[in-house]
Image 1 (cartoon, rainbow, N blue to C red):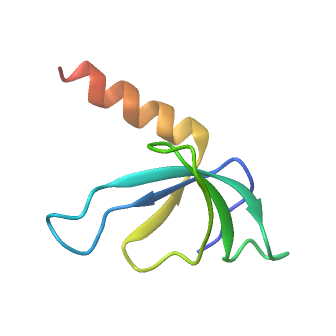
Image 2 (image 1 turned 30 degrees about the horizontal axis):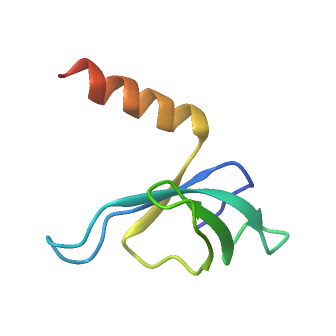
Length: 75
């Protein structure tokens, strides 16, 4: 997993009852873009240091906007 500051961390959760979350990556703590990441979660505005698991992936801000536009156009 590789990221840069400004990308978004998307987390699905391991179980059906787990909430889906996303947060903006504020800081990347390695030169090669690997974790850990300082993330500000969109649902709470809380910042945490994250070591993402297998249920997580990275998208850019442009990809997030495209995804949101596509989701809203279906409603």
